[in-house]
Picture: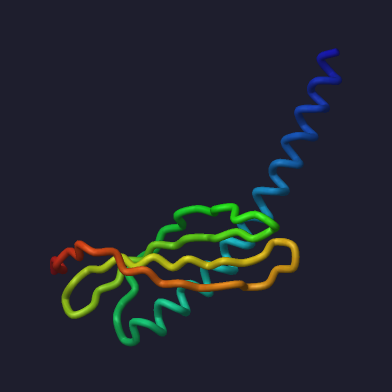
Length: 109
């Protein structure tokens, strides 16, 4: 019985790992797209860092990945969020949006 439970646990772990790996691949692909969008929106401005905020399921195979960036613009630190919507079923990009939150922090040198 213990052997059987161990095998089931191993199979479930492998299935979960495969799903996580597929999501990481999507995350990396769409992260690169988000970086390109930020660099186009803020040409010549340093993009200092970004963070993956997670994935939201939109239904019918569509998901939205969100990335928050740290950008210096006119001596102010801003944190725009890039939202990339895509379809997992056909791997097509659906939409890209850039949101600039309010409450920008002055740059500290």
